[in-house]
Length: 64
Image (cartoon, rainbow, N blue to C red; front, side, top):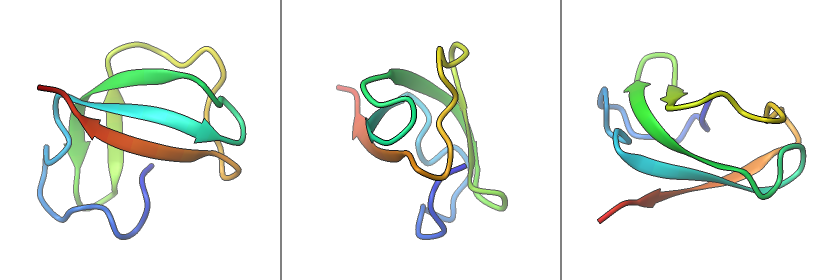
């Protein structure tokens, strides 16, 4: 689940990379395959080795 300030359009982050920069799961990254604006939930291409939680910080990067 992304921050409340995440974009309000479905699939706004599709094909972007989410990188966990701090907290639980730090150093992991995944490709976002879907995003639901109403819930702010991003779906990733493969399961996390360690699930991010409320201590995790992240960056979303556009893939070129």
